Length: 556
Ligand SMILES: *[C@@H]1O[C@H](CO)[C@@H](O)[C@H](O)[C@H]1NC(C)=O
Ligand SMILES: *[C@@H]1O[C@H](CO)[C@@H](O)[C@H](O)[C@H]1NC(C)=O
Image (cartoon, rainbow, N blue to C red):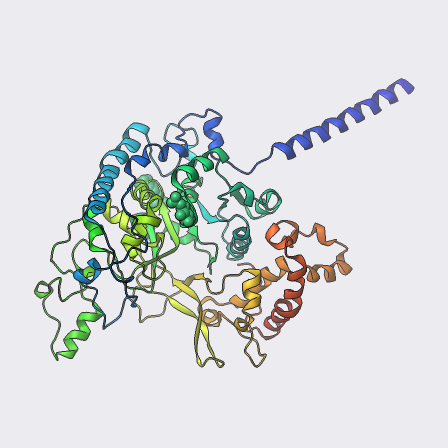
């Protein structure tokens, strides 16, 4: 009996030690999902991400960089519906100072990329989609028709991404989310390991040796991470969202729409006129004949001035018409690209060329496509690439809603966000349509920005403001209350200290409080307490007390 007892306690001890060891090993070796592992584990039918970059430097352009290199000054910014300013071919050719030698290099490199490198990737390497899987992989069948959201996080961006993920779930969408973390130092391991899985989300990283290779060889940063995030994602169909761009309702229906099936690339419009340098079309091998195919508001204004009707399209010339009304050009308005839906298989060529445009974007293709105009960056690279590769795309026709409020302090409309419409039903600028996204870019929901500009929340008289009021009727809930609730719960520890009195859960065990999980929040604890006390918590209380939409916080 005694003997047996000892044996039992030995077994218990061994089991305990084994458990602790397994637990520790798990903690030590756990790393977020890493697609590159597939390859390193020797899996079949995998093309490592590095292969998309091998040999790419052969098509680099070594001429004078075009960024900021103007003959006189950057391009004039006018709204796409401007009636006065003429973006003629001659005007648009006179902005960037493109030396003939640089132009020839750009043209040769572009031609080489499209006609040598791309066929090499597709036919020799065996690229079948904009990612690492091929039909030879046993994962291919489950990859086909998969879909999910892709965001970019890392450091303070993981904070914004978290708020967007919360809203994705509030809309009732259940598709998985991948938050791409561009650099290892910005990982926030507890956030990735403990918080993300609760939302059917995960952090996605590249192998650190691959990151090193990419940053040494191609100096990737900023906008360029979007291509990497899409490429590294495990979904065939990607809903890409900037980390300050919130879906306002469940947008999964877009993926099964005929529009998406037919086009495979959906994007949303910006406000500004297209200011692409005509030389870009020559570089890309797109011939633009002097054949006008559409009218601008400029044409209508001119006709009115002369008391005439619009002339026949064939009677216009490069001299008296907007260049981007001619055949083979990209139409107005420009794109916003903070949100994009793309099928990585049907649009593999488009994405490969967009990758090229983005790798050589900051110095060459961003300036060529925008010439210093508003929001210069990756935004035009997607429809430009699709146009060159002759793959379909669709940009929502109704432009967008300026979301904001009329300020009594400044006596003008203060714009805080762009509301994007449903691409399927929003055909006409003059007719109402459902809003489905809000790009909350001014202010972004940084903890300091919202606080330091609390005139965004309060009038000078001390009264509160609803920043996003213009959307409520359209979407059927109170967006200010919705977003500030998630924000305040994640930021303000005093809310939880108060709650602890009721449920005895200590602050450091609160999953809702991001001070436990994100350095960005934890590093500023004392300051955040003050911000919460002075601004965020009182504002939230006011929003709660005055809302016209009591169901705002019920998930859909
Ligand atoms: C690398 O990228 C950074 C950020 O865009 C830029 O400031 C820097 O000049 C680039 N370096 C080179 C060598 O292109
Ligand atoms: C994505 O593209 C592939 C290849 O063209 C096609 O077979 C598939 O049906 C597309 N998926 C969706 C959801 O449209």
